[in-house]
Length: 265
Image 1 (cartoon, rainbow, N blue to C red):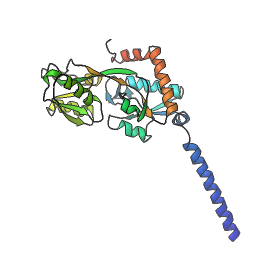
Image 2: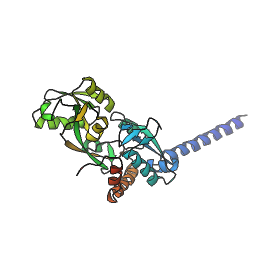
Image 3: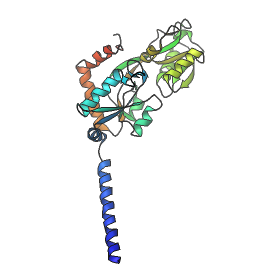
Image 4: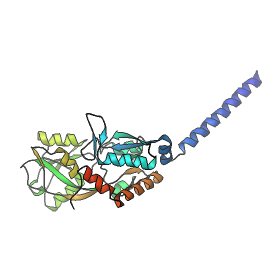
């Protein structure tokens, strides 16, 4: 009986070692290797940005410039049978989802900055935008008229710093209110809770109507890049090569025209 017990314990011990070895082997795979094995690229995208990333309320499908980039990237990494799993992100949630490995990369109007590059990899720019200001029609003619105004900005976005720098140059003092999303910022302008909303011009264009206008001021050019985790160097290298090829062969320009987001030279 004692011998049988020893044999059983020995067997269980061996099985536990095999199990541990298997787990270790799986966890040692790079993100790029795991993506290829799973056949799925998990991407954080916008779901409310016309022209870039928008979830169609009728079909439930995502569409836009960045969505097509994600589809093309998946095929480049995985092959023709690649699948893309989209997760809607905003300025507040995108890096947390990326760091927690719930997504593989972020393609969501994510501005490249030196500070952010210390924490995440960024591809070369796939789009250049400028920061602008949205306000009720006739309220202001330019930033110079906005002394004392309260401006809505999104949490964790770079727009506040850009606007503050531009305002200081023309001697204007501004106040700010932070909101989690673009729709909340626009609602604040419509309701009078704030006097204006500042973010990338391409975002502001999504909210133009009979009551709102974009002021003529343009400042702080913003380059958008695809972000990955700092230790995913292999994936980052693959993505950057992909963006460079699309830029060199004119595909990025064609896609921007297709989605009506091409910037005037």
